[in-house]
Image (cartoon, rainbow, N blue to C red):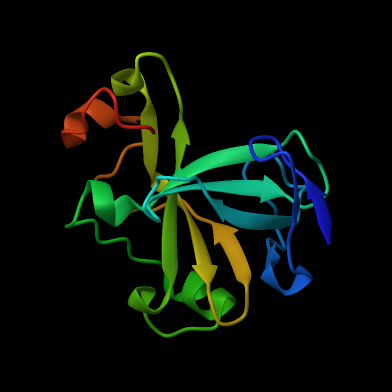
Length: 150
């Protein structure tokens, strides 16, 4: 399908690549379908959740493990059942990023990751109760260089 995007212009995206959010994202509950698109030069750690319906709606996301290798998100048994897996380790996790200038002032939300079952293409955003993760971790605390993109 042809997709108009916020960051990439108009591109072709296979419909089977749609990620389905039955409950939407926090604050965007009506948005149920997104594509996960990599930013050029992002080395698969810098990505974009692009709405499949609303061209101007996109969220910058990062691989949380690239920032914090000891990141250990644990879903509740209810959330695991909802995602169709037995262990949190069987899922893909992404953290949403609020981009600021300078980049070191940008933040990532490690407490409310986006969780994807890569096999079923189903996703949910959760609130982690364990782990001591915050909603606003400064990128600069992870040792990223100022010139690196968020």
